[in-house]
Length: 287
Image (cartoon, rainbow, N blue to C red; front, side, top):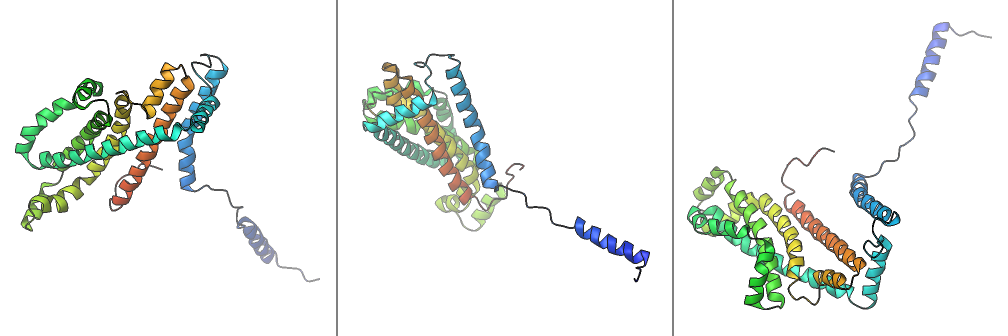
């Protein structure tokens, strides 16, 4: 029998042990980043639901005052079965869409004028800032007196709520534009609408996008106050109807629907904002 040199034996042993060490580790299960973000976003709502159910089980309030989540879902199914849920939701969505669009359009026109021209700012700025400090409910009696109890005062109040966040952010965005960009635009012969389209709007769009999202949130907030003006449909109407009939489940259902609709519309607007601002290289937070 031929014996192997000890050095060769050590080499062979080293190779075998190295191969053993180099074996690939079993693959680990990794969730996509999008799934992790979705799970993270669901943590707080699930915690709120758990605390809600715990409060019901411990009887901190009676079931008439604080119904469990399943009773709220049952109330939605009840309203759906008699044909009241979808029409009321659509009425509120329509009012917010019209009021927010009108308020945002007016804010963009006036905000560009105020941001671009100091004389216009001196004329309109102080009055608009004073109106911005007036609480929303203070306008309700006046709008009812002027416009009646139809949809006109409701849409006007929602538009007013959406106007000021868009206006304020747009004026701030225009005033933060690098002055050299304006000078370059004028050097290329841009004036008036051309300068606004080519320089002002693109440069101020990040601020405008923030204002549009804040204005949308305000529109949903002002919706409830608007639907207190003699409304016979809408989520605000369901809130009042639940209060008058002592149905806490309908009240909570309306609140949950307002939260879901507000979050859903903000998500759609945020997606559009990211698509339009995909050219920007900004800090998006740590992972």
